[in-house]
Length: 316
Length: 316
Image (cartoon, rainbow over all chains, first blue to last red; front, side, top):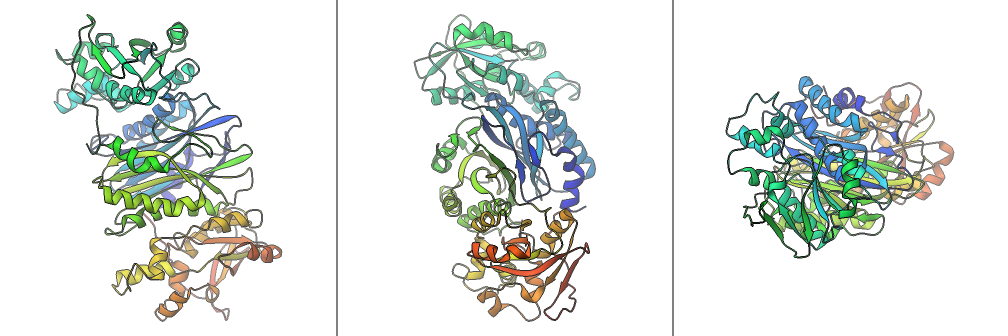
């Protein structure tokens, strides 16, 4: 099957006109009709086999994660997902692989209404670059640079699940990967789109947690010119995490482990109640924005905690 | 240098707010302000080392070509270039390489006003995916599906230069690559942005010539439900091509060779004079759209010519 037939068969069904798509796949470019009065929010993320997912990762999970990490960026801006392009490099155009990959894209993409509008398919080692577009009412996108001293730092959902799953995978101590809650969190992250949208207009700043709370929060502190104090004992845990986390590793896994794709938000104290009511995946206060310019970590007694920063860095 | 420092140092200077960019590089996503009353035109192309450019390709030329092929797609839609994202996968973040790569991006991108707004940098074998955004007045983009029987088929510039350059490179019979006109055409294609914009409202259909005239024209014929007759002896040649093309190879190189990145347009006969006057890189009639549904190739005497279709296909 050549490149064009492959695109028609597998990716054509994901692309249809309507809902802002004037012309989808099949021309030199897509033609889109943005909503008037909206800003366009654009993000691009690449996943490479062996680096961002295991060599033997199921194609369904590859498709899911490739789109989910981009949706998570849109969620962090409070944007409504609209469209995406897919640049897929693969060694072999195997129908089974492509079918499962597309099913993974649809499973995470269809519920939030995002539509494939174009891309490029090339032969090469497996890598996926998705560029995703969302929209927000003009001037209302959440950003990293609005945090102010006194803001409450909150996170959605629970932290550490993906990092513990990755550690169990590396130690070969994982339970059945298919049915395990932690492994699911690692393989199929849930972008917090509804939470991001609900907190637009309430939060002063937001970021999604891909590299780990400490590393990602540092981006907010730098962009906003502020500091922060985090109570590590307050970080929310899932039941599976709490029951399996090895002694002495909780703080490191929750504060420095990546891949949770929860949101971290800075909220003025007087908006906390309203914010908590608007989010149905949990919104937990974990610290406060300070004017020190530094990130301080402490436990529930207020004693300082030192953690080695292990957020993932390319080229470091 | 880690990923974030690298992005700041090399790609930061390409991204600035203003001109529709509310927020550029440095957050979870870029925030863009599309022009009201415009359609958004979006294209995405990947270049992989060893497949789309030689292993020893100069980084300046890699940057140039990666952006130019996307600009060529925007040109084929008649769109004004606005913004792009860059997903770069590289083995080593070498300052010299990155500096030259960025210079190549700027050399082709700055004159047409396109701005980098985001992307992703990962470690891996060299590949570049650019997603480029342009704008057109709503409903006026050039497309592949509007060709009608009787339309004059025209091409901008000259054809075959890049294919002959590639052949000379493969045969090791190239002159000094740096100073040679044909090699320049291969390494640094010139996207026909002004021509595409000028022919919006005049042409019925358009496509850019990346895979070769015959292969690309077939996309127009299929999308429009028409046929075409091409006079191969009328295909425009550059002086360098004419002086160096081996005997008997002209038709194949000009009609089937890729990488020229000229535009092919279908124009109603009564708009030909106006169209020719609007394009300053040459606009040559090379055939006519028919109602046969087939692509017929002939020479200046009207005798049929058979050519092996050699347009590049991935996975074929």
